[in-house]
Image (cartoon, rainbow, N blue to C red; front, side):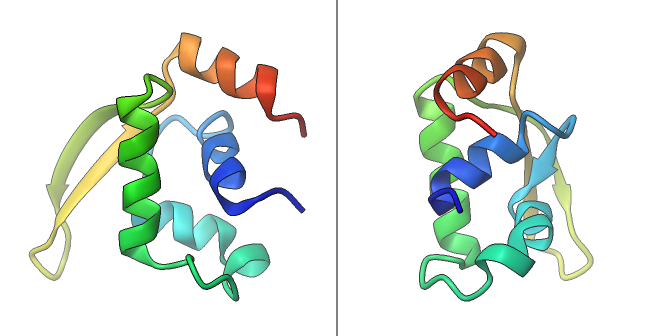
Length: 88
């Protein structure tokens, strides 16, 4: 099993875009018991990946509870870098 942050990054090489909640839904079966498996921690990991040039914001909207939902995606160079360093 990969570290949680690796799994988060790797997820973006398999989907067009995702929000923190969508990442949590996709990874909950394997990582749901991890202490860091919380929306704030996932969002922090996504923002760090963005700051490091691996991901970029693709869009944002409001969810059903009127909370901001930010979507991220891995651009071609970011996906190549993720795949180079994190193997399946």
